[in-house]
Structure formats: C-alpha cells, structure tokens
Image (cartoon, rainbow, N blue to C red; front, top):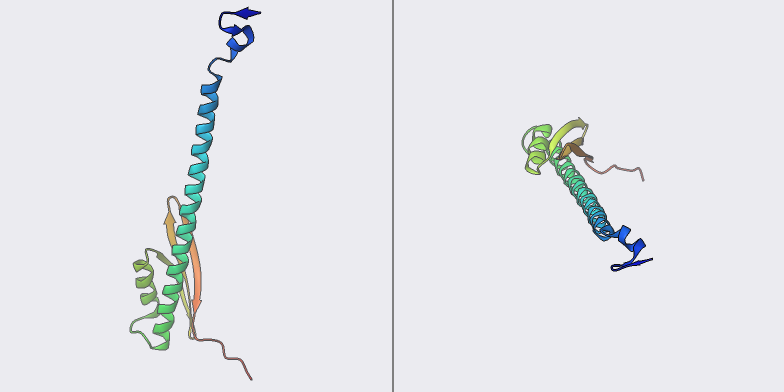
Length: 123
C-alpha cells in the first residue's frame, strides 16, 4: 500500500535517524569521558611515582649525610614540592622507604620508592 509519502511502512520509522544520532553522540561522549579519566589517572600515578622517587632520594641523602635535616622532614618537603602527600617514611639503616599519594578527584594514586646505597656483593 502506498501513501503520498511513500510506502506505508516507512511512516512508522520517521524520527529514527534522530534517535540513532543521539545514541551515537551519547556513546562517543561516554567513550571520550572514559579516555580522559584514564589519562588523568595515568598522569596522577606518574606524578605520585616521581614524587616518591625524589622523596626517597632526599631522605637517603639526609641519612648518608649529604643533606642537612631529618630524612623524613626532607622527604615531606620534596613530596609537597612535587604536589604529592607523603603517606609514610621509614629509615632502615642507610635505606629510606617512602610512600606518596596524589589525589585524583575522589580517588588517590599512590606509589612507593626505596633509595639507599647499592648493595655490596661479595667477590
């Protein structure tokens, strides 16, 4: 059966293109938000790792006498300068172990690092 707008069955599909376009745009938006969120989390993890490395090195320098101040105090200052929070600092002999964290919205990215003199192996 034909109407003046074409086959009668096509009249039931008017507006389907708009719904499909809206669904496609929503899917693209959600995918974009996922990619941005993953990128932000990755950057925060890298910042936490860099801050942990620098803070551990600063603490190890203080333990070895190459820097003035308390090891954990220096680690705190370096972590704060790197935009991170120092969660823990432990000095074990000449080794310094630190854990730092960087806020990512409501979540937290954290990293740990150990610094000290190299291990001496027996010949």
